[in-house]
Image 1 (cartoon, rainbow, N blue to C red):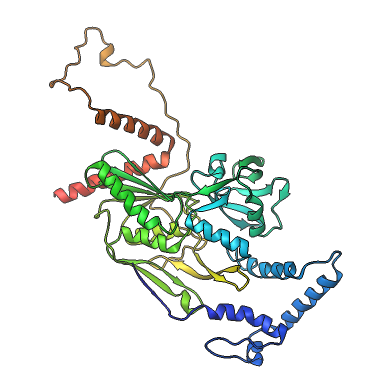
Image 2: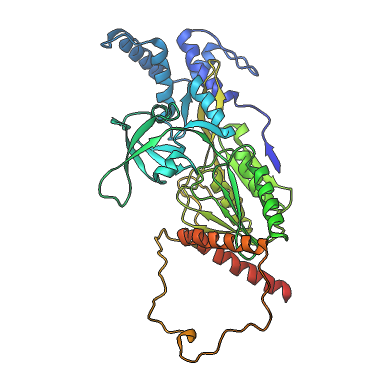
Length: 452
């Protein structure tokens, strides 16, 4: 993986933020590279609006019906400043910042879903695999309008997230509005310590592999290559193709998304970012070689695939390395940078946009699949009993094999059990069933072309 970016840091972002307090406190705060006077800083700041802020602060502090702690007032002001920018910028007090760090390493407390804000309500971007949210039936796109009996309207995202988190084993009631449902749905969830295993694998039929990435964590790239190695060992031969399942994957660590893309590419651009500050200009290019050795890949996405998932899907689509199947992804194509603060907290601020190798913006558009698979419910029908077969005809010839059948080995019995389990999985998962059929067709076409 090759990364190119600017050498300067993000001091310009924090410098502007600190500059507001320079004027208010009438104290000079110097930029570490270029000392600035109060007069120079003041020219960059809207003094009229800052005076209005000070006036509002004083009025609230003095006239509000009850005394308000200064720390609470200032943290509220910071939160409002950031949350008013976009749904993903936010202020993280020390406790929240620590929880976010735990989240990226794969263990945290709560319900197990990625959320954002839409029209003032909490919107589910995606439930995470094997968590209380998924097990309770929470779906991507759900709007959470109440937490217990408390409306989410008017709360910041961080405030709602705090309510959803709590002691493992405690319960919370979510009131949800879902597209296609006539009335709100009430779900009771039990909080748990969320331990996310980001990569799972399974061997499908005809030497085809299946890898599910539920979230991009620090080790996801390594875990992906390990999973393909395990599938190859189980198959006792190189895989003939791969289904990479990114459905309902809310994203995660950018570097992990780059590593996953890099694993399937021999060369070429993966993703690049553009923003106002020099340090936000980054380009990621593949270098390490293709772990699938050119074998066909199907990437499954849906409306719950966001951010890092869209980077992978967009890179493999633009580089003509994989066929993207499913439904249009979420459309989160912005980069958030965590800037630690002296109080132990941090601000998460949007600093750039993602672009796929061909220059497409993911933001508010998403990745459109090459093959659309509608969200449908499919039921398997039993064979009708009134159909007559050869064995039902009077005087039919007996079934006799040309070669004597040997007794099944233990390994053959296990394979039969595995295939039966797989058939049951495919019967429940129409999208995976269709992806496997597409993959078989691609593998067959590739084999025919190589033969000729």
